[in-house]
Length: 494
Ligand code: ZN
Ligand code: MN
Image 1 (cartoon, rainbow, N blue to C red):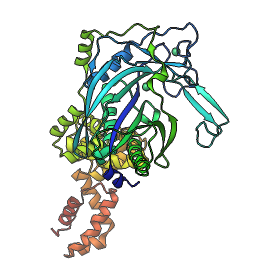
Image 2 (cartoon, protein in one colour):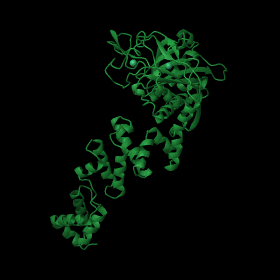
Image 3 (cartoon, rainbow, N blue to C red):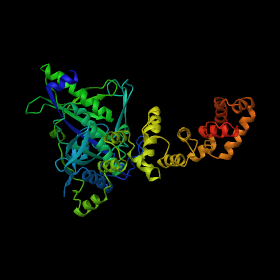
Image 4 (tube, helix red, strand yellow):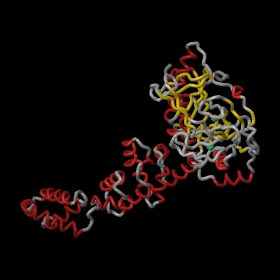
């Protein structure tokens, strides 16, 4: 069913579960390293392989990380809680259970405010709990990389046991046609928040942040919520938005045709922007949860929690309010800067000495354009805020004009070195030295005697050719207006 038609008939209710891998040096319950991209099965030990007799030990840094996330999400940090075993069989989970938390999560009852198209939504957080990641299966031989049609499967346990924080929202009602945007705004804000805490690199493309999106529909005006589906592991912000939209359209089609929504997990396909059916959703009882007998309960002291709370950095929402005031941005300008991921880059450029207006101009125009051309995020460009500030300092000092500055950016991005090296190697300084400009003009007059005579005899318009010759001789680095004045002066035509 078309989106507008679906929204006219039904009201969507959202729920979002997000898994975030913490960037700790070692795994959740053992000392194995956690680096991404290592050779398969080289970062494993008896504990994370679930070998008989191996015992887990809780990673202190991971608990610190999840408490910071809980506090930043305005959660209550409980005084006492336990880990639980979540039992299910999956080849990439060597113990055949995941150590997670069930009815005693560490952080509860928080909220996160997000903005979508100028409106603020308060997303209630039900819980934030600690668990461990699974390994990864690789299905070989099929066309799609999925298990269907594959010849065989390989398993990499490097990821098994990496600390994983799960953040679960309460149902999010009353977002109407903005539901897909609100879902995306929530994922975006959550990513920014966690990144600001420095506890995870939150890279959706590498799987260190993964969203599962629950969607249900109810007829407009109905009191009871419909059956929800859960679209798993949506791995980009844009896909979060698309998955919600596509699921609303699909469910509306099923419901208005008299069908029923089946409670199930679904897979989102990047190529088609559609979801397909996965497995029918387990109920909690299917997992046979029970308290993890190999680990002591967690009882974070109030002093420790207070210490962590005091250590929280400025959070993104507060930072946005501050920079908006400091840089005198309109709401729209602020949104552009935020959406471009440029807040920190501009801040660092200002800290390195540039004024805010110029710093914003370079990052939002020249550098954003180049990032788009190369298909990378702004912060992935091979240029530092300090280098941008250095180029801007040369502009402010009159040593470079904007046109030359753009050539310096080009050189730095091409790996030709620091701004000063690019300026020297490419010979990019504005010719502001009067003596140098004067001798270049003398040479141009001598080389173009016939034109010079015309100017002397009063044909001032002919001076244009001489100015052009000066600009050519200086490769565009002279001040053309000043060159013209000097030419006319020298030829007695001023
Ligand atoms: Zn291990
Ligand atoms: Mn989980």
